[in-house]
Amino acid sequence: MAKETYSFERYLNVRTAFGPHFSPDGQKLSFLTNITGVAEVWSVDLNMQAATPSWPEQLTFRGERVSGAVYAPHEDTILVAGDIGGNERAQLFLLAGDGSRLTALTSNLEVMHIFGDWSPDGRYITYSSNERDARYFDIYEMEIASGEQRLLLQHDGTNYAHRYSPDGSQIYLTRWLSNTRSQLLLVDRATATERALTPEMNLEGRGAVYHSAAWSADRQGLYLLSNHERQFRSLAYLDLSTLAMRYLGENRWDVELLEVTRDGTRLAMVMNEDGYSTLSLFDISQGWEQRRSLLTPTLPRGVIYDLTWSEDGSRLALSYATADDAMDVWVWDLEAGAIVRATHSSRGGIPQTSFVNPTLVHYPTFDGREIPGFLYLPTGQQKQLPVIINVHGGPEGQARPIFDPVTQYFVSQGFAVLAPNVRGSTGYGYDYQSLDDVRLRMDSVADLQHAALWLRDSGIADSKRIVVMGGSYGGFMVLSAITTYPDLWAAAVDIVGIANFVTFLENTGPWRRKLRESEYGSLENDREFLEQISPIRSVDKITAPLFVVHGANDPRVPVGEAEQIVAALQRRQVPVEYLRFEDEGHGLIKRSNRLLAYPAIARFLEQQLS
Image (cartoon, rainbow, N blue to C red):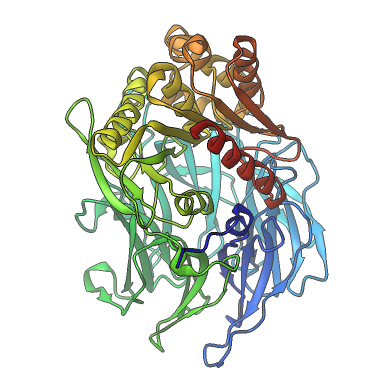
C-alpha cells in the first residue's frame, strides 16, 4: 500500500504553543500560540487531577504578532508585548486576565519597547526603549496606575532590563557590546545609579557573555550563566559583596537556560548537548554546596525553548519540541512527580508517524574539521536523492532537532534535508563560534561547499539536484554559495538574506549596526573586504535559478537587499522569482503569507529539478 502524502498546506497548518507563564495563584497558564495564523495570547486552567485537559481561551485578537505575555505578581493581569507587520517596534499593553480589556501603555509606534519585569509589589514595570536615540536602548520604569514613565538609566549602548531585586530596590540589566560580549549591572531605583557586576570587555579581547542572573535564597549573590575564560556557558555564582564569580561545575556543552524560583530555593537549568536539551532540577535552599537533585520528567529527545516556575515553586512549565511533533507547553508538578501536556497543538491532520526524525551526522571540511549537522532522510529510497541544504541564520545560531513543517514536507516528497552547523554556529564552544569572524567569513561558505561534496560522494545526493536554502544570515550564505561555488547547485532559495554587506550595514536598524559590526567587520575598517565578499559583486557568476522572499518591513535586513539581487539577475536573464510581502518583516510570520510563499517555493524547485 502506497504511503499517503499530504499537501504543503497541511504541513503549514501544524500549530505551535510556547512562552508559558503562571498566574499568581498558579491556577492558570498563559501562553502564545499561532492557532489563528499569528501568535496571540491564550490561557488554560491548570487542574493536574482532571481526567481531561481544560479548553484553552483566546485572550488577544490583535491579528498581529504578540512576542510576550507575563502575569502581574498579585493580580489577574498580563503585560503583553507586540508589534505591527513584523516591524519589531513592539508596544506594551495591559491585558485583563479574562481578555476583556487590552490597554496600550506605550504609543510611539516608531520606537521599540522591550519588557523587563514587574516590580515585586506589582505597581511598576521596567523596560528598555530606544525612544531617546534609535541607536541606543535606555532603561525606563512605568507606574501602572498612573502610566507615568521615568528614564531610570541613560547610556549610549544596548541596555536591556531584566529583573527587580527581591526587595524591589534594584534592577539588574545586561549591557551588550556585541552579540557575543555582555556585561551585568545593577541600577538603584532610588538614586538611578549603576553598579557594574562584571568587567566591561573591549571588542579587541576575548569576549564573554553573562546572562540569566537570579538571586540566591539568602539574597547575597546571583546565580548566572557565563563563558568568561571558558569555551562553554556554565553555571556560576556571583558574590554581590566582593563581585567574585566562581563556576559551579565543569561541562563540555553550553548551559543555555537557567531559571530560579522567586524565593531562590529551586533551580532549573537546561544543557544543550549536541543540539538536544537535557533538563536538571535542584533544591538550593541551603546554597549550591548543599544542593539536592530533584526528580526530573522523562521526555523524548528534543529541545526545551523556555522555562518558567510557578510563584510557589511547585511547578515548572516548559516549551518543548521534537523533530517529529509540534512545540507545546508541558507542566511538571514536582510534588506529584507528574508531567502534563498543557497545550495540544494541531498536527494539521497528519499522523505523527508520517514525520521523520533526523540523524546527527558529521562531515569533513577543507581544514580537517568535522562539521555537525542533522540529516533528514525519506523512508524508502535513501540514495541518489534530491537534497536541500538548509542553512540557519545568526550566524550566532544553531540548527536544532525541532519540528519544521517545511523540512517535513520536502522529506515527504522524497527530498533529503541537511541542516548543517557550519563554523560560526553556537553550541560548540567559543573557538568554534569565532571561526567565521570578519576576515574568516568565507571559511563558513567553504563548509557549505564540503557539505555538498560529502552528500555527493556518500551517494546520498544526486549531484545534479542539490539545492541550498536559508534565511537571514543563512540567506547571505545561500547567495555566497551560488556565487563562490556556482557549479554545485541546481537551485537556491534566499529568504530575507544579505546581498551587499555595505548597504546592509548602512541601512539596518541603527540599534543593530554596532552589534553586527563586531561579527562582520565595520565600514570604517573593513569596507573593501566587505565589498569583496558581498554576493552582489559576483552576481555574474550565478547560474543557479533563484527564489527570493522578503518582507517590506524588515528592520534587520532591509528589503533593498532582495531587490538588488533580483534586479541584477533579471538584467542577466538568470531565472529568478521574487515574492515581496508588504505586511511582513524579518521572515514570514503570518500563516496566510507562508501558505503563499512555501508552496510557490516547492513548485519552483519541482520545476528546476525535474
